[in-house]
Image (cartoon, rainbow over all chains, first blue to last red; front, side, top):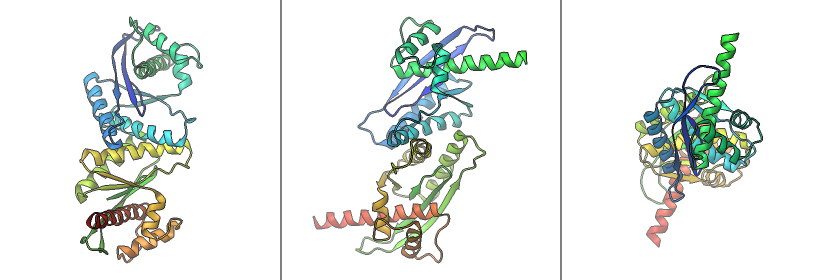
Length: 166
Length: 166
């Protein structure tokens, strides 16, 4: 399961690899988004992220959780708010004993689109294509979460091939 | 209970006000610190903060949780890490249905020491004095947490007096 943390919307997406061949087929199991109301206090929003994410993890039972590495160019105020959401998301995964994988934004884009400076639109388009979806996943946060999951499977695949060859 | 979140040590401290008179006596019920090992992964550290804080909240059963408002002058990288810890701390309080009060650093210092630009040492000294402790609380993170709790009681007291007079 890939998770894309955000202070307004946190997306998640579950992707499965059908085999361990060189070009495994990727299957989208499901995706969703947790929308936080600005009317709610911050503790209530954090509880919503934790509870809904725990439900999604229990429903999909992923083997691994993958997240984007922190994007440091945001300002300190946004970083702290994002950190709070990210903290409870990582806690939800840790509480269920799931390992965590982190990938840099550049790595995710190049893994999905083929190059690191790809636009949001290109990522969405390629996510839909790789997962053979009729439409691009919405909201974009869910598409981003699926992209992280795809990146993890591609990377895990590469590591596996390296092991086999090594 | 005051909580002072930190990426290495998170302090907490419980203070009780003995009555609702104008100058209530403050009593320190207890304090402690959660020390995070750098050997641990971030998700494990977040789980430790959440679990130990939940235990402390269940043990002391405070009526309110008070934290320092975010200090925005730190850089984005530190802010995100601090945010993660703060997120699980706020979640622990929210899970137990506790209300949250936030105070600016200046407000906390002026409430405890009498002026906002007080040093860490002055805060520690005044915390010990106000709570009639033989020694200054250690580590400093626990003293800071007690300071937030004292600030909350002082402020709540003022609000109460305003209500009575209003």
